[in-house]
Length: 130
Image 1 (tube, rainbow, N blue to C red):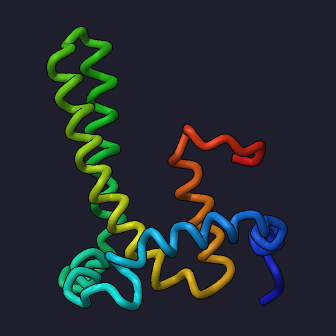
Image 2 (image 1 turned 90 degrees about the horizontal axis):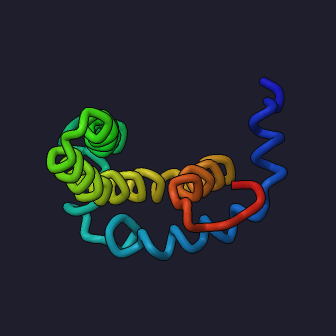
């Protein structure tokens, strides 16, 4: 199979390698080669028989969507609660995402795609391509 458009696009984003290097260092204690095997297996979803990150990200998305709906309905206390729950559950989504990415980050395409994905979730970071 030939090179796809996404392959060419990712190959043209070498600036993601620096961000990927930072993510690898940050994720090393919880999911790197030196991390406790039990913790890494728990975060990756070995016990679940499936990658855990896709299942966990549903929580913050659902809480934040509910927060917007409740805010529009004038239910400020409920909106604040669901916003807070979304922030709490985002920690689990981040940890499972980093753990899953650590295994794939040895290859160029997943390493850069993961860095791009994480970078898109950090609105305070300013980059002309993000």
